[in-house]
Image (cartoon, rainbow, N blue to C red; front, side, top):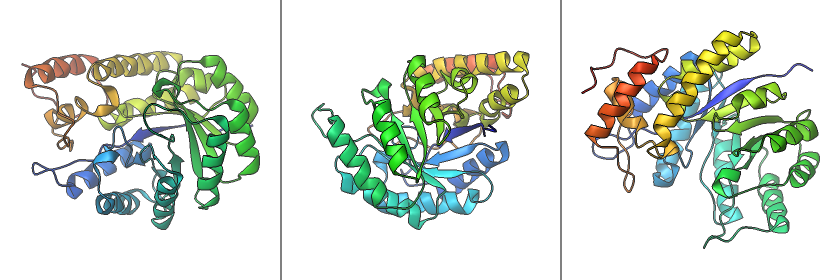
Length: 308
C-alpha cells in the first residue's frame, strides 16, 4: 500500500513589541514553511500560544494561514484543550468556515486535574465530530497525562469517516505499532513530537509533528526525505541533529517557545515576542542556546551573529 509521509510544523504566532499580532511577520514565517514543503498547524496551544489569542486574533490567524498556504502545503487548525464540548465544536466550525484542510480535536480538560472516563470521551468525540464536516485528527497525548485507548480510537474511526488521522504523543512504541496495525489502513498515524519519528515511519506510519521546524523547516523535512530515499547516512545525520536541537529547546519548556522565538530573532527570522505569562529566556541563556545551535549547522538558516 502506498503511504504518504510528511512532517507537520506547529507554527509560532509572532507578536510585535506592543504585544499585538504581527501579521507581516506571520506571513513571512508561513512563506518560509511553505518553501520547505512542510505541513503546517496554526493556533496551537503550545507553539502557537493559542491560549493567548482572542477570538478576533484567531480568526485573523486562520484567514492569513489560508491566504498564504492554501493549495501550497496542507494547513490545519490545532487549537487548545477545551473545558466543554461546545468550545471544540465552535473551534471546528470556524476552521471549516475558513476552509482549512483539517483540524485537530484537542484533549478534553474537565478541570481540577480530573480525567474524563472512557464513556465521557466517547460522548465528547461523538458530539464534536458530528457537529462539523471538516476532516479531523484525534490526539492521544500520553506525555501530557491524556490517553486514548486504541479500542476507542478504532471504534471512532469505524463510525466517523471524517477522521483523517491520529497523533500520539508518548513514549510507548508498542502502542504506536498496535495503533498503526489496527487503524493505519484507514487513517494517518503520526507522533506528536519528533522523538518517535523514525519508529513511526519504520512501522508504517505517516510521520511526525513538532515545533522544531519553526527555526529550520528544512531539517525536519530532511528526515522524511532521507527515509523515503532509504538514505541511512542522511537519516542518521538529520535525525541526530533534530534530537540535539530538541534537547536544547526542551530545557526551556520545548513547545513554550521561550527559547525558540529569541533564537529565531537572533538569526534575523520573524520570531516576534512572547505573550505573558510566558517570558523569553534571558540574554545569557540565549547566548548559550545560540552557540549550541550554531555548532549543529542546521540547514536553511541565514548567518547568525557570533554567540557571546
